[in-house]
Length: 225
Image (tube, rainbow, N blue to C red; front, side, top):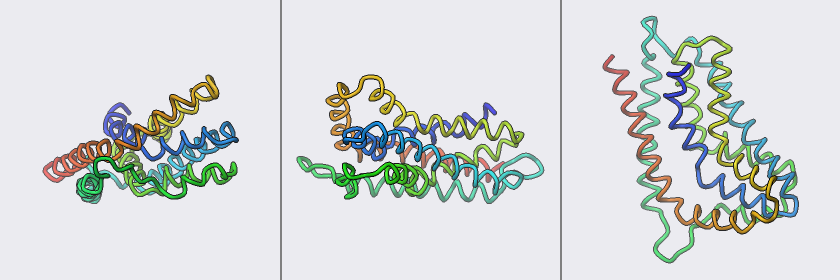
């Protein structure tokens, strides 16, 4: 299982520190229903990652490797496509970054977070974790790394749980700080939100370039094996 964890660790870390979910959680914790909405958002996030990862594992387990133990060709092709997509997304993110002095543009739904119910907060967590294209690709790639490792069913479940836990550390840490410190954390969380939003393009460009290079390298290694 250690090999699977090593393979998906960079993917899970990028899921955990993605700026948009972090900003969304900070906004949830600034609403009148901070505790319930923040908890619902985190629960939706975990459910989204878990369900998507489980679906990929069910479909890929037994098909992700050749009889020799090497990754199946379709997995290498998928990794290559994912890697190229991340490189292109990194370029697009950098070129679309705000000009100096301009504020970063956040999704319009974030302006309505104060009116969110518990159900909508849960739904936002699911969408940002499993439906958001970037996280969807990251989670699919992570689950494929687990499927390639030819683990037992129990080990696969444990490996997926580790992926979900690591991928949730960002928002769970923020929620934990709020639950322990309460409203006294508001100023620090607000500064984190402003900093994260301002540096979103730079953070994601670096992360996407690194992940793209990793996945392309994995694909090339698989093709040559």
